[in-house]
Amino acid sequence: MSAAGGHAEVVVYADGACRGNPGPGGWGVWLTSGSHEKELWGGAPQTTNNRMELTAVIEALASLKRRCRVTIHTDSQYVKNGITSWIHQWKLRGWRTADGKPVKNAELWARLDQLNAGHDVHWRWVKGHAGNAGNERADALANRGVDEAIAGSGGSRHRRG
Image (cartoon, rainbow, N blue to C red; front, side):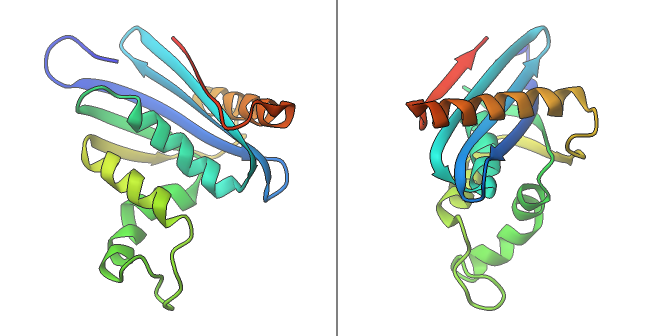
């Protein structure tokens, strides 16, 4: 995704889904930049909702070919608060929580931190299942990922656009 001149401006809606937690899961992303759009989705046969929420934003950022201005919309407070607030202390403590326990999903957080640093990212929380068209589209893609994981093609990644 690119825009003419300067840095591309990309709008991302990302969502994760899980049927059972843990259980089969999926992630979905809808990216737009100007008149261009792209859909990404995938799934895993055995995962957690938080892992799918993280995977969605990781896949969104990893799909960008060069540094961009990115606005990411997520309905996950876990993702938004984790990347904008909690991660700084986690890294200072060697990926441990305030009570000394290992940070869950640390490998995904480290990857997200690396990708986040490569772009000018603005994080926005949106209420899930509240009629936001972008969030509903990402949710539908995430559920497509769950369906594919259940059907046996889990772990796959797909793109359209």
